[in-house]
Length: 487
Image 1 (cartoon, rainbow, N blue to C red):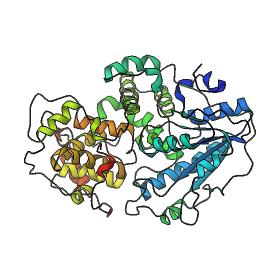
Image 2: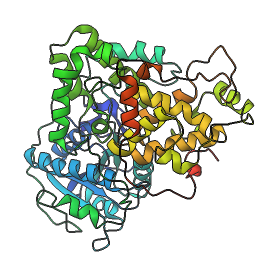
Image 3: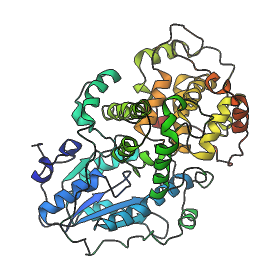
Image 4: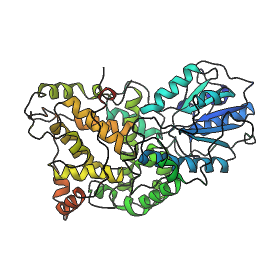
């Protein structure tokens, strides 16, 4: 039995996903279990909802699922808001299909609801929320737990294998895999918890938004957010779009995945699922079930599992051990020291932030990478490695390079602000040391564009990608360096 958890959760098969965020007793005068979702925006195969349902069944209380979107989160834009609201609309419909009440709120000038989670929590027997290690979800959950009179239980929903199962203190990916791989079968294929209580139909302290018949584009256009960054033209929001991507993975991408995944010029080389995983529209168990059921060869399934589980979940594991996963001080010590030793080196390839943001630098390949971010809100991982390493040469010092990479990723990419993307950027700035000491980079390995440019048609593909018409995004006066640099 897990300490600090009520018996219904402590005895649960999924108990390693759950931790108590405060030490309040369950409030037996509560009217419901509040299930507060920030990023795990799916109704099915969602351990956060399942934990709330399990606790509700034990206490004979209904579950109220709540999701709200504020205007003032960092980098709020048409791109992020539209994707989130599309997911939120389907979350509400999915909750109704499970027999659960759902309440959503879109923060805007004519409908402010300050302190809404606290007000909803005031009538709750307990609050069940998601355990996210990055971006605003972490500190918002911690703040609510500190102020709430109700117990707050945080549930990990992003990984197939709960990080708590792996244990603490693992420093390298090989050690992580030795513990992770034997656990994968055990944590696969968990069914949804059925609710035994009628849906909550009582009063709420606000008028919930109904998104099922709302014009989401018109709603987004009225908000005080960044309208210079439009919605992605390639990743449609919502559950249906995610399932189309998942079906495409099993039928078109997976059969050649092991050999094609590094080829950015191929439309069938990558799954493109990362935005849907980041916002929890899909979970890794559902994705892996589809992969396992496909007819693709075993080598392709193994390679995909290595990417989705071996790398993504390693980065999530790392993030949970860091106070600020987005901070520069997470880069390997040797790499930071080597980069510092070369911080004063001449940098003839410096580029202004405006040129980098708009993909208008002197480097055609880098522009091709950046314009994927600008137009699609997503970048092929092979290009992303080149993109990140080149930023070291384009900026005046390694700290500015880190802040620039994180800023561009977080503002433009649908899968930014994530343990995986911060882990990838840290690997670009560190990784395995080179046996050569180079100007600017020191012993940090560089990366060329030959894996794309030298393919048949690669040069033409890069030229076309670098010429993509892009939106006229607003350019900040300065980078938000304090967000990414330890102080």
